[in-house]
Image 1 (cartoon, rainbow, N blue to C red):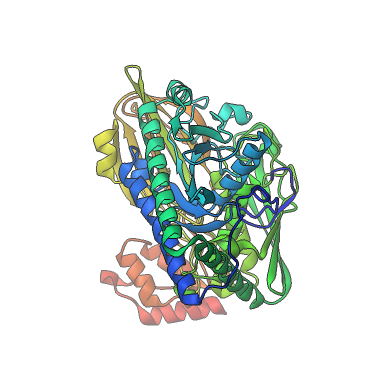
Image 2 (image 1 turned 120 degrees about the vertical axis):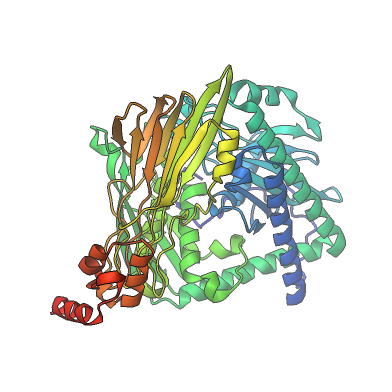
Length: 615
């Protein structure tokens, strides 16, 4: 798929992988009544959700157990998505069809068939995977000796054997081989037999291997549960009914998306965002890089063209796999804007939803890199790409978007206890811009991330880290009729000597304001040394040695404002002052609202101030 300049959306490569091998033989195309379709679709979604809950409960690491950085889903024999776990992050569950399609293609090239009892491990970023640390475990489901689909879990693993500890912050990898172990459709169980040498390789080449391998075994168990439930569904209703219902559900999702696209005016809208890249680099091809999205609507179909996006960076890992990252950024944004759950209710998430969306990405650009260009740090640029698509759509549906989002930072904390590594990954929240009728959300993961924060108690009880501060960042949100969201301030102190690396974005550019709203505020990061000295850091920091008493201080970004700040209800501005979100000085400067003695709203002075400004 990486060799193609286009894709039809998530997992929709049109390459026919898995077809013509007898996988679909015997499937009935008879129509199924809508009630049965709904019941079976609900059952598929419940199976995926159960897989997700089982994985959370069995996992060893907090990144899965607490942050929920995992995916779970069911796909048909051709790798078309049927359902995914509701509680997992879109960047984990969304790529599952692509994982399976890539796996089927690679196994077919080896003439290696899928058999009952197989478990396949896959993380190839150029064959559907999102990036190397997001490893999938794929379990085929056979009903009466016929392949009826796959149950799949994906999860972010805390180490994958890269050049430095952790599986984020590997921002100096020069190629795919420096990013860690590559699993290109590797069978870890074959026909029910455990392939012990593969597991020994994992234990010998991964730091914190007990933790990581434990998480992998939890994934396998959850995937097997999903396959068992999927087969039981076929046994209850019959394969013909289940498969016809799955096709009907995909057709229904496609109709929903086509109807939402058709409601837009035909047209073409373009937006450009600049990402930091490597702000401290002397090489201009590594910093201040454009992402360009041109959205074209014709009838009930949409094309998202990324032509104009910067060329890939051949020796730094901010390149984004077309299938697994870029397609998810695009379809997630389009779906969120056009089929907002708050408006449309429950939307079935399957491969039908993305059929009307075509993505164009020139081969060799950041959004369609060529192997072996590294991709492990694709997370933040991909989120910025989603924001760029939002910015383009804002011109067509201004009341259905948010202003600019504040992107995320991810820090990999690590150290040694004797001969054993400890590794921890912390996602530092971003924030949303304001949207029509609502202020931006404060201190949350944004767009396709959607992970949760780790409880301080969990961090401090398992790791040599102390959380010295965790609070909202004040007086920085983008001003608007609906203000941007606030970022957080988080301070992590090392209790033992160790190391850290940082993967982030959004230090050099402010989140965009919309319709007269003010721009938000970028993130910042400081390494505060125990001796009292400190140093400001860029958004990407390779592994750095730290000592006990040193601390990372991360100030999260603030989202852009939506609408003219002078139209914000003065009572809301006063509430923000009383809550400590903004100061009285900012209220007057940005909103024209005068706060008098005892924090009382001066209505007359506010009216006069705003009238004067409008003139």
